[in-house]
Image 1 (cartoon, rainbow, N blue to C red):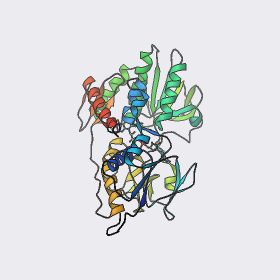
Image 2: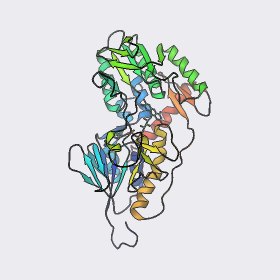
Image 3: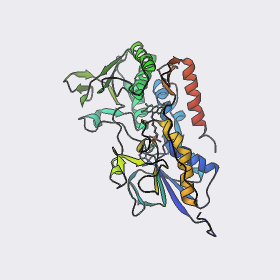
Image 4: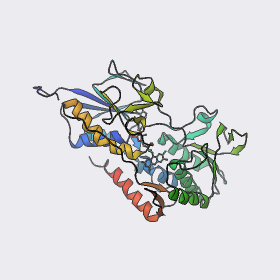
Amino acid sequence: MKHGAPFPFVQDAVLIGGGHAHALALRMFAMRPLPGLRLTLVNPGPAAPYTGMLPGLIAGHYRRDEIFIDLVRLARFAGAALVLDRATGIDPAAKRIHLSNRSPLAYDLCSIDIGIGSGLPGVPGADDHAVAAKPLGAYAEAWEAFLARRPETPHLVIVGAGVGGVELALASAHRLKGQGAKPQITLIDRAATALPQIGPAARARLMGELDRAGVTLRPGCELARVGAASVTLTTGETLRSDFTLLVAGGQPQPWLAESGLATRDGLLAVGPTLQTSDPAILAAGDCAHLSHAPRPKAGVFAVREAPVLAHNLRALASGGGLKTYQPQRDYLKLVSTGAKAAVADKFGLRAGGPWLWRLKDRIDRRFMARYQAG
Ligand SMILES: Cc1cc2nc3c(=O)[nH]c(=O)nc-3n(C[C@H](O)[C@H](O)[C@H](O)COP(=O)(O)OP(=O)(O)OC[C@H]3O[C@@H](n4cnc5c(N)ncnc54)[C@H](O)[C@@H]3O)c2cc1C
């Protein structure tokens, strides 16, 4: 509502993507609606997965419905319209969002929180024969299908030895062994060292976990080709692979760079107010590049951005000062290790064990419980 306007002035705020920042911002609007601001959420599906619990789903500790945020319920709670579609472009001059299946949506304010995908589009065969860890919904389905038809001794190649790749390798090993299989899992990465984002103490502990789980770590290896039952490395070496998982290769959606908005490596460049180069368009989560304080991609930043995002959308619609977001330097990383145990990493601390799994489980379930209300 504009200051001094006699009647509510309807403005349209369109939130593209049901990522973590938008899910939380919607919940904040549900608790404290702004009269005159009409909210619309655009997301391809009616639910959005919570990645913190994905390794637990792969390991068999969680059911599928436990890791998905119900966007239909959330939108209803926030009084927002939900458009089940995918944004394919944005025209900041005309204030129109292009969608894949319907006519463009007009907006006064827009926020983008669509994440990034994983995958290696330049690698022959990757699109046809490998499964990308993100989007997660498709991965979870492919994994369940694989478990139902897997061979006695399944060979897995997981590409990307960051935190996600290590967690998923350990989770896969745990699940397959639990089924009585004898998995052969190879974790490859083009970098010379695995787990670059983790402190040396926690890294050593996770290396030990990989070793105990029988996961073969192959740093310094690059994928040249993916086949139906094998992968070929750039050295020419071929590895059998019944399930090839790509956790590497953060892929921003190309339409962001084509929008005319300022981008960095394909991500929307935002300042401390989370505004892009167009002040009416904000961005948060993995698809945004924090120009003032770049950070690695992690859901924790999307979550912390949510209150600033909600406040600033409200302020831009109704007048008032904008808040700024200063990301924390470090955060507690809890890396699950297959069975119900986890390793913690913060400020070089090294701790691990079942109690950390219980802590992670409590944090994750508390996060998900916030969406059950309403
Ligand atoms: C295996 C794994 C484990 C991880 N574990 C952790 C962890 O423990 N802690 C942590 O902090 N981070 C973790 N991460 C990183 C975390 O997943 C991301 O940082 C986080 O999901 C980013 O959230 P987001 O809000 O950017 O969007 P996302 O969670 O990626 O959600 C994006 C949403 O936008 C929708 N969307 C996509 N494209 C469009 C479009 N064109 N139009 C409309 N909607 C669209 C998608 O369907 C989705 O609902 C992990 C990642 C992986 C791969």
